[in-house]
Image (cartoon, rainbow, N blue to C red; front, side, top):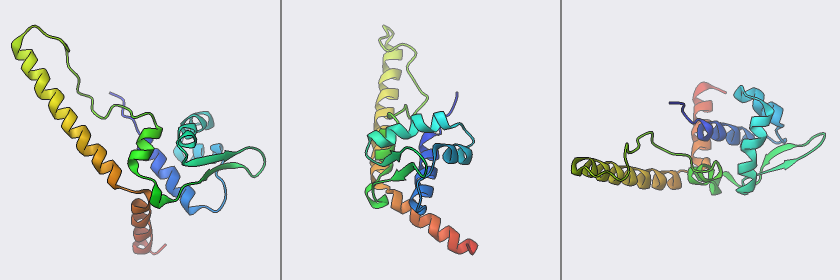
Length: 144
């Protein structure tokens, strides 16, 4: 199963944007992530629509962070990428006649619902500024 890396990649980009005084072009971001500028523009459009970034066209243009890192949660970013499925588990038959499979489905569904609720609460509690502070601590420790 292919893993969805958009959340971690966007966190990476947003942290670089927070550290930059100049707009970042789609091509610059694409080079940083090892992808192409079209994919970057499509993905960044979700962040723009979510009010986290803005784009300016033309010479000297690019993407800029327009919301303070203290005001951006992982939940916000997750919402901007369309809230992809968090878990690969699924039910083989959502409406089975077999009582055993009904019990299995109930157990799996309830467990996934609880895990999703817990993960969303954790995403809501982590701010981009928290990760930014960790980056700064790592830079200091590395002598950068």
